[in-house]
Length: 47
Image 1 (spheres, rainbow, N blue to C red):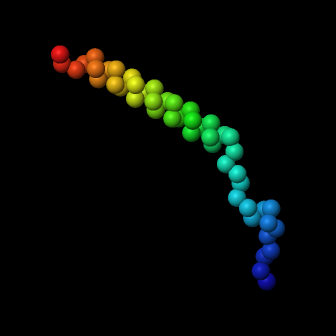
Image 2: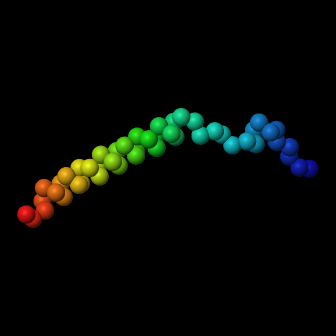
């Protein structure tokens, strides 16, 4: 006997705004760290 699953229960969940928020915040943090690394690299570079 096979088990029958309703369509509503078999569908995957949607991504939602929480995942988008996490991705956006992490991208902003990456750019901030990258900028700090660039500034630090300019400061320690030999003249």
